[in-house]
Image (cartoon, rainbow, N blue to C red; front, side, top):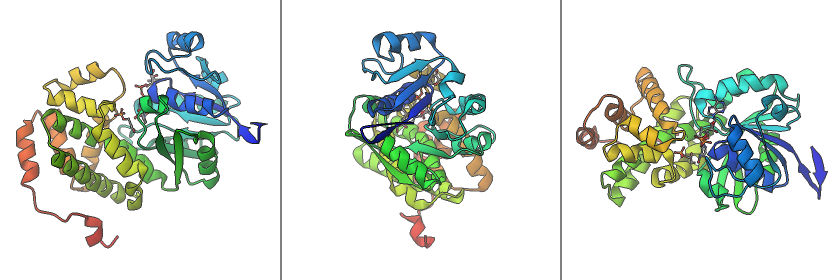
Length: 345
Ligand SMILES: NC(=O)C1=CN([C@@H]2O[C@H](COP(=O)(O)OP(=O)(O)OC[C@H]3O[C@@H](n4cnc5c(N)ncnc54)[C@H](O)[C@@H]3O)[C@@H](O)[C@H]2O)C=CC1
Ligand SMILES: O=C(CO)COP(=O)(O)O
């Protein structure tokens, strides 16, 4: 860490040169931190060096001069004060485990990834905890479409950690005129919200392609919130977290925006593409596809009522006709609006 004009300037490393990793790296760089963006693609790294642009994932956005691309994991991680991890969940553990031997003792680790590890059902912070138990860890999650952040559109996010010091330093490190960071100690709730909302973005995209009305959209988003909080609270999250940016905030943006890859997967399926065709057409990470399978199985195991998850699973993985699922959803048992009220929470 060095000090210039009163504000600390940190050595920041971001692992993963996709759209979100690049967008967050650029925010840190604009805020006067010394940022290394580790990526696998030599072509992309050269592109950033020569043209200050990540043409594969964020075409058309100028990257700050404080951001340096790197292909060498060891040199990227050694000496970093903060390491942000922004690779898809399926690669998360491997990348973290490869990095840990090079970490400085004081380095803090922050996940930017919104997914769940297959088979173990672990969240990314739990993987960080296992792989680097002596380091402070945190997660960032919220309504944060990468392209809008790169455009410097006003956005807000949440940093969650048990460590108040970590929360505060990330708030100070990343906040600027276009980006505002809020804190939350409920790391499990924040992270679970970010992972599960991707499922409902697929539902919403699908319904939009089928001509959903505005009333329908409001009903889907609100019932999605009820369903995802029911699930996460049962697994240990604080229900209040779902009222914040990482809960309802992220749900609104991903259920409404064509910039969301998960929403687009649903939209293309609604237009008649197969899942495989939809994924190919997007060509980027859409975590909700795997999360759907995992949450569906976990809900079945624990007996948690999740009609939207069950319906989407039947459409995508069991070839059930969409009309049959919609009619089933409309004829289920009549229920309470806000069930936490009757549960006394
Ligand atoms: N794009 C967005 O708007 C947001 C994305 N996120 C989350 O960030 C995470 C990363 O997503 P994006 O950056 O959007 O994905 P992306 O699809 O744009 O890029 C993924 C990046 O990870 C790299 N990668 C994949 N496997 C790797 C491996 N084994 N080793 C090293 N690098 C590997 C790819 O080369 C690529 O650079 C996801 O969990 C996503 O949900 C979170 C908030 C916003
Ligand atoms: O999480 C996101 C916005 O907050 C990005 O969503 P997608 O991964 O669906 O693009």
